[in-house]
Image (cartoon, rainbow, N blue to C red; front, top):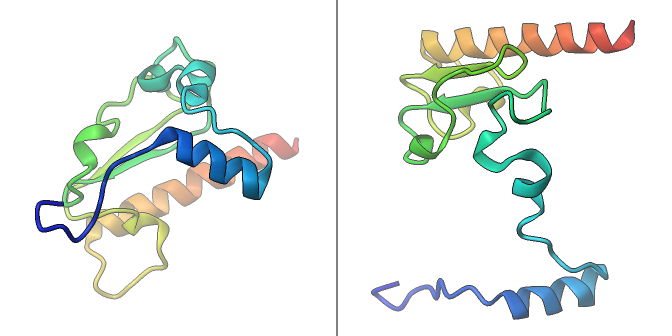
Length: 119
């Protein structure tokens, strides 16, 4: 960083060496976009299904998320008062109605997917 507190230099050679040493695998940084279509994952170009994209607008990363639903099997939820992963945490009395509603919808969708897969 500008203050010298952290070094954000990324060295793929070093990452490869560490992964090989500890896990005996070499990372494939381009595998996800090749396998699943990258940012086309939420379109009909991709064969991915049963993925929920949730975005909290208080999360500074939400701009890189999927904010529009393009296929029924990959629902998109927007929580105006949500932050990063808030819908994946346990319910809290401080949760706003939008967070509670999204969490309930996600649970219903996941239960439906499980039921469908069990048949």
